[in-house]
Length: 176
Image (cartoon, rainbow, N blue to C red):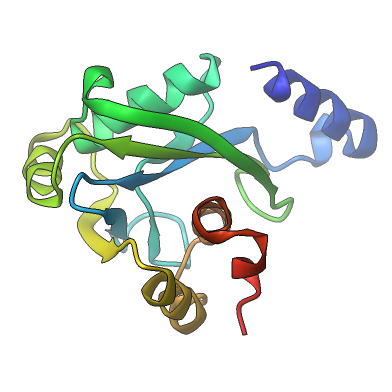
């Protein structure tokens, strides 16, 4: 997990801490056992002009990344570590113009169905909005990204593109 330290050192060298809006974020593309991608329609009072993102996500709190994203998953969706069957780091995105300027994206698969995930999310400690699901199908995800890119938080958009590339090849991300 030294990528956090490497990214921070590189940013400090290039921009200086005083020019950085904030620290590192983490997010995850979470896939249910019935092959649905967890998304969140964010509450209007949150300080993002965009409304839709992947769930879960948060700001890095000093934990090793895999532990940090599992804690976010527990807090926002009520999913425990032993209910995950896959947890893979799929990439890092950069966005210097926002509160969180670089973000690690994970791909997580759970043994829970989308119905079970929705029930857990209702009981979770934290929630950023209303949970909904996309089918994990190549064309559907591609079309959703193309049609809704202005509503998606950029790091969530990036995470979905990285997940698509992970599933279907690097050529998949050529959104027309």
